Structures are given as C-alpha cells and as structure tokens.
Amino acid sequence: MGARKKIILAFVFSILPLVAQNVEVTADDFFADENKFISELSGNVSVKKGKDILTADKVVIHFDKNRNPIKYVATGNAKFKVLIKDKNYNGSGNELVYELKSNLYTINGSGFLHEVDSDKRVYGEKISVNQNSGTYSVNSGNKKPVKFVFQVEDKKK
Image 1 (spheres, helix red, strand yellow):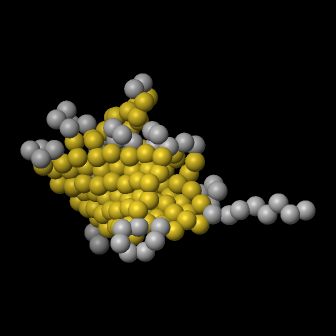
Image 2 (spheres, one colour; image 1 turned 180 degrees about the horizontal axis):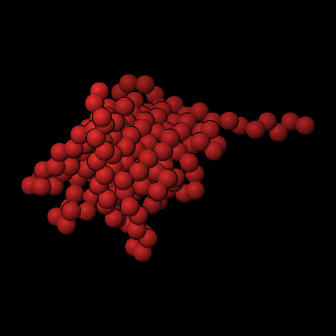
Image 3 (cartoon, one colour; image 1 turned 90 degrees about the horizontal axis):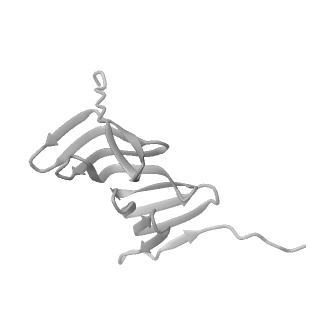
C-alpha cells in the first residue's frame, strides 16, 4: 500500500446556534459531485467532530445548496463513538446514518449500541437514537428479537 493520502475537509456547522465545531475527515480516496451535493470518501475513513468519531470503509456526505453537511451515511465496517446526553456510546452496524439537523443516529443491519458508562447494550436490525429528545427506538426486523443486556444491583443484605 502506497503512502496514505490524507484528505481534510474542514466544515463548520453547529449543533447549537452559537457553538460551532470543526469536522475533520480523513480517507484514502475522495470524490465530490457538486451537481448531486455529495462527497464520497473511501478507504480508512474517519470523521471527527470534537470527541465524536465515525469510522468506516466508505462515507457519503450529503450537502445542502449552501454546501453545509446535512447527512453522513457510513457503510462497511461502520462504527462510531459519541457523547449523547453526557453518556458515552459506541455503536456499529452495516450502515450508520447521522442526520445533523435532527441529531438523529440510525444504525441499520446488525445494529449494536453500547452505553459505555453503565455497560447497557442493545442489539437489533434498526436502532435509532434521537440526541435532541433523548429517545431510542429498536426494531428487530423479521430476523431475531430485540436484545437488551444490562446489570441489576442485588440489594440483599
């Protein structure tokens, strides 16, 4: 493998109106289609915003007409680490979608979500996490049932 190309795209967008953060994207390869308002990154893709990290074999970034990112779609070895409501989460699945405006994370296919601090784990075919409302939705599809794993304290004396 030759020298890894490093592609850095600096996007400034905000989750809160007055708080903007840079997003750093690195990948082996980059393709942009200005007519379709998309950028495709492939090979060792990493997207970092603050402490949030998304990694995958391929990430497609969708933009609005003002060239602001509106959605990330990650496929192939897709994983993320994020802070949601002051809790650390790791997640993975066949496809990870993050919609910026609604702060909605969706894991499609072989979904796994792990709340690191409490060691709670959720498995399902589709897992949606709305960061704004703090709500979660898990669907099993028609394959296996939804699975939750958590610990319960034994209060015996």
